[in-house]
Length: 118
Image 1 (cartoon, rainbow, N blue to C red):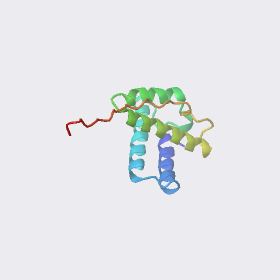
Image 2: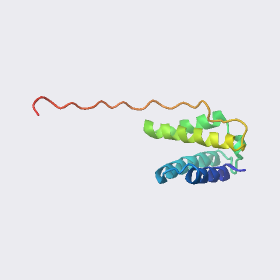
Image 3: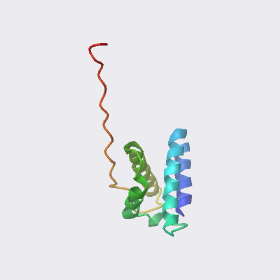
Image 4: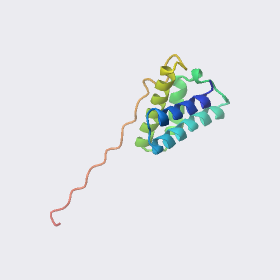
């Protein structure tokens, strides 16, 4: 099964079985389509899902994660982990290549304090 076909099955699973929100489906679909584009750009079109590897996903994260806010980077990692779990659970691949990918640290925003003059 190709990577694109696996992604379609995954998104259908999220919608039907997990009742994922429309925003989650859009974001995950966008993130996974970036993954397909990444492999197409490297000359690997119609890549089978079982050829995903942790190094290839790490390279994808490095390339795609630049310029994204930490929350978007974390969502991208969560998407890849969830997709990898789906692939292994459904026996489409033997080992989850996203296992062990690290979440970036989220930005810490300090709250503002009202002054005594208020």
